[in-house]
Length: 479
Image (cartoon, rainbow, N blue to C red; front, side, top):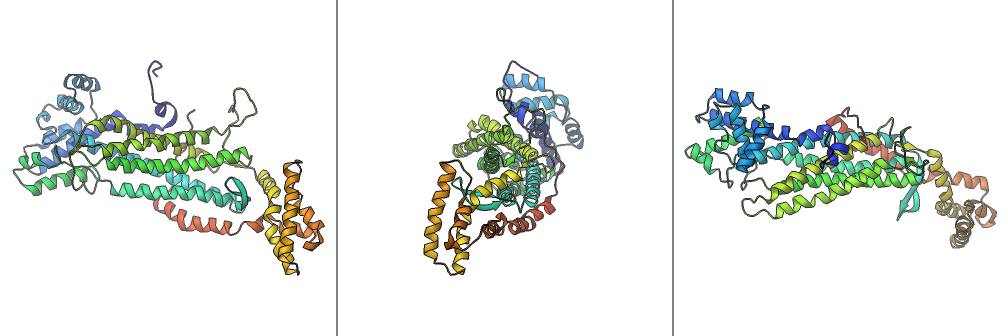
């Protein structure tokens, strides 16, 4: 491990080895070579002067990459693709003369970028589905546990812990739908040539447009794609990068919402993220149990959300058929969008793990509910008193005044909420303390929360799980 030069924290602290491999030199350059093999094989099938022996030689050396030679070649020619053409030719002397025949740099560069994004999206999807499954299990477990619901971060009415979890889960479902859409529309660049006209291939095939089209079809089929882009300049539209990274940013938004909610709930002492036996929360305050996992989710999410501006600007500043100012930027921005989301999902897998994930403190939740519930029950109390013959307007005014008194007892005097006692002592309400206890059972104020959770799981989550399955990924937090 180098300690005297910059290393990306995505590699040393955050992203999984699996996602790091997708954006590695090995993945990139072996894919280049697979594309050269596919090109040679297709050209052979369509009658060009390419032999099976040459194709076999290329195929046998896909993983035989001399990186030192490639680096030296690039110093000489200042062109990464030609450096690797020369390096590939060195270990394939018989096929050297037909490598990259008719192609331009973006044949390997852009097609590889599409393949890498496709493979990275598969990893993201697998982890996203598992997080959805785990959150649904959490929602089901706590669908009937009443808790305070908030508007403007002020106690409003009641919801349940499980119902709130469906809100987190549903946003991830929306992201999954967007991810599936982008995966479904992803197309290979194909063999479009220097400015997208396929002129070089028309020359090779002596003007046979059917063979030029078949060449693309064969390449796409070998690389696992059903289609190539219908038209292009030298590159595929950089809007593709933006569209894909936009989904990554959307996942980051959902994760940030989840992370912030958990951080707030942990400050209320209602729900806590995992905290290991040997974990230290603070170097100074030994009692601290900081929500470092959810803080990291929010931090990485902010980076990914901001990062999506890079491919947006790149897409807008491509001049005519292409410029090269996209290259340096997209090498970083696209990779880091995926590495960031991979890291976020790894943490979410850890935090939502059914066995060792979120800790719910039900007694603290109930205690906080009961401190606010007398205020929330006032409408029901008025209605019950009206049924017994009371005047709605008089009842409303009495309960308004008593609520102000109880509020002062809580805020000014630091006492418990005694609104129920005040109401029971006022004969206008015609209700006993025991009757009020029945009225103020939290489960009376959660509406359809349990049914909504059941319906969400049955109608939304289960079809996703049935269609995709759930992986056995075990999330590990590196640091």
